[in-house]
Length: 188
Image (cartoon, rainbow, N blue to C red; front, side):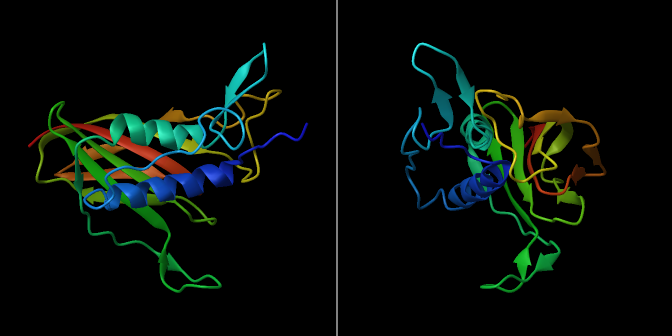
């Protein structure tokens, strides 16, 4: 049986797509994932056996869990690169979501740089008493790495240190080729 496997690279693409959907939440009222289990799905199973999460599961989980509230349209400045079809493509894609009900601001970011980490600097002066709850990163040294039945946790999110708020600015290191979720406790 041929097993459909999503790679870490696929997780980065899904992360960018989710950021795009969030940015356009004023027009996109509903978006669906075609299959939830098996056949191109984020969760794979074996009849009468085990289940495991594919790499694409994690950006979808994070966006579903923390992408609730009001999308904040951010002005992004990022280093750029050129590719075959486009010029001036930003290395960093990001969006912020303000969940007033629970007092959290969540920043989703993908660093597409193949050369190194980039420090995200975000002006959050519109929110008082901001503090970092957590910075979660999905990163792997091999873009083709995948979670499989034999290696179900090859690519999993990690909580990292280093994100901090100073003088109304958030500073967070984004490792090269990474999906990032930075959650902040804030007051409006």
